[in-house]
Image (cartoon, rainbow, N blue to C red; front, side, top):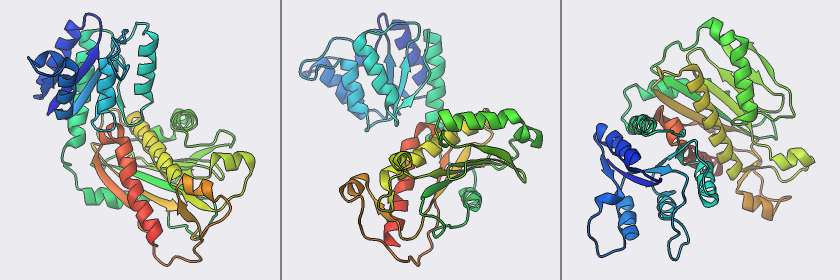
Length: 371
């Protein structure tokens, strides 16, 4: 695998050596600016060509922004990031204990806010950078590895966790997302799953992290058999099993409808579904790391279904905005919708979350429109 390193740090020699050492230690090929010899093209054109041939991009950001390039007005590193964004996996590192220049601070914010970026923790010294890069590359390799557990058993487990089809029960739509991990084993002892501190951590993250819950609704926490359950009436629901399996219910009701009590044409909005699936995957990733930090569960299956009344249409936000109070409604759908599922190595839940969300969304949309 070719790994392109894009960086601009004053006195970057030791950091560059750390990156090269980390990449070669895992038997990958480092691609750096100094690797490009004489060329009829400008140095930046050669670097961009090298980036396009790479499999993965490592971005190392320090205090300085660099010289803006003619035409784009962006630094060379910023140009390389824009070239990679959406086309290549990007793992970014930011130097700590420094005050970035204004343009560099804006660049760092742009990288951190990209949902599909693989943003890592900061680093202080070359040794930190080497260790974090080795860990990141190892996770990336694992995320692409072929699974060693039986995916059929994991798919069955995830689908069994989902609630029964409730298409006729409510006008308010929601998604149900189950994440089952394997190889199946006990992750939490009964005393651990009942400990108040665990419920408090789940509650806090659901409010202020991935935002599974509405802040203006109360939350009830308790045990349902062997499962820890946190639930809001008319809102979200979190269920955690002793084997680390997770079931989430995320309401799809539009925030502006809830705020203004506005009634519009009943529809499942595609962008809201995607955002909710992404939020659920984000929460599940955090929760798995919280209860299983040593990754005894090496693989996961995500299964998702939509809970909504049959007459609700599937629309994009643009379609809903164009006709908020009218549209075509289905009186009855005869087809039973099966949950959509996806099997991945566990690191993919963190490193490739947006792609997983999209790969779950598209079959849901096809299924909903077909039925």
